[in-house]
Image (cartoon, rainbow, N blue to C red; front, top):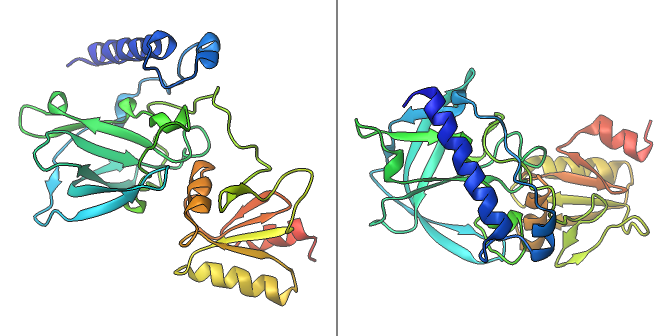
Amino acid sequence: MEVYEWKERLEQEREEKDRFFAAHSQSPISLEERARFEGLSYYPPDSNFRFELELREHSDKKTIQIEDTKGKMRQFLRWGEFRFNVGNEECTLQAYKSDPEEERLFVPFRDATSGKETYGAGRYLDLDLKDRTPDGGWILDFNNAYNPWCAYSEDYACPFVPPENWLKVSMEAGEKNYHLKKEYSKEQIIVEGRIVMNKSKVQPRVIVFTSSTCSWCQAVKRYLQEKRIRFREVDVSRDANAARDLARRGHQGVPVVFINNRPVVGFNKPEIDRLLGIR
């Protein structure tokens, strides 16, 4: 397919999706939002993010469990992996199936744009027969990357992206953030199903999000203890609600330290000192 044909088809598909969201009875956005809906936001088509690749199928297709945004565990088969380069960065993405008989591949991913220009919990690619090449390969086109429906409404449950599919590079292709959805404010975060931080009341002043296997989390806690800073610890490996909310806000890793509502990612000692007024 020529580049101009590919671009034309992509633009047409995006227009069709906009019409579906704006008027169809099964649109994931609310009736109130449909009245204000002017179209989804995308990166411009970029053929540099379109790859023709071999799927390196796994000989041992293990079943893994992936939690969704409603807390339910879903089972997927780890079917194979794609390997490709973005600039000088080598990237690998796992492809999953929910049933060994289905032709479709499910490729969820996060990247460096997640939580910034794109949906914080990540985006999806669905590959089927139309994405096959004549030589048996697959077309992995990130211009087709889309937001899961839970990005538009909390009525839907969507699988989180497994950590093995978190890319370090920026995939500046496909769908961007949905701007009409009501999000938690930057001053709010959910722990154990309730808001524990907001503008009017910050209690405690410092909250440290950790996991039981994180060595940097231990370093952060030791540092705060040495400085005699009182803090509340939230272990996301035991608190699924906190883990889900961090993911929605673009924080997939720990530690994350909230100091007077401001997040500090990792053990960033200078930034922690600055926000705490430590000299």
